Image (cartoon, rainbow, N blue to C red; front, top):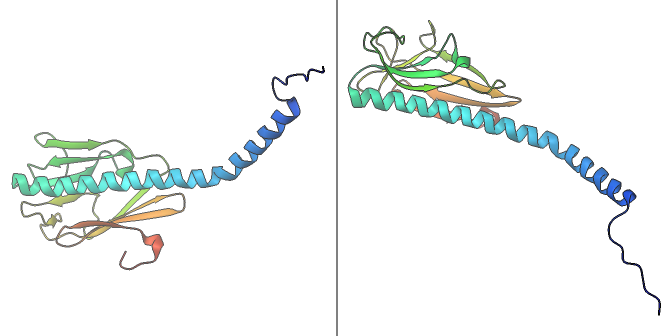
Amino acid sequence: MLVKPVRAGHTLVELLFVLAIAAILAGLAMPAMRGLLQQHRLGTTVNDFLAAITLTRSEAVRRSAQVVLLPAGEDWRSGWVVAVDRNANLQYDAGDELLYSHGPPPADVAIGGSFTDNGRPYLAYGASGQSLSRTGAAQAGSWQFGCGGQHRRIIVNFVGRPRSCNPDTGKPPC
């Protein structure tokens, strides 16, 4: 009676072939994965920023006081803070109550803004929930966010209502 030898594993050639196929598939998937990660970082940053705007507006109404959203440093790249602006100077300084602080966004996320009062970056809400400029008039504008080739926008109208949109879809109004 002949006994057939039992095969205990795979040959080196078989293992190298499987590794080559896995490397090819991973190489094909990497660009799509990079785009997915950029989309996630951009979406997270926009949602965090929109939440800070909403907090600013709701706290202004709740406290019947001016509440501001300001960059944590010179610009939005260093993060942002929400504070009760007791002396109405559109800055976070002594005597102001800090309500929320957010750290810097991911390094590859760009943030830019354009508002009716472009003196310095800020968004202030009064006790009525309306956005205010330095002179007390209504303030409107938008922030633009970019990461890779993807873009998002947060728009604040003259009443102070924020909304986000994707200008890449081509659907107006964004």
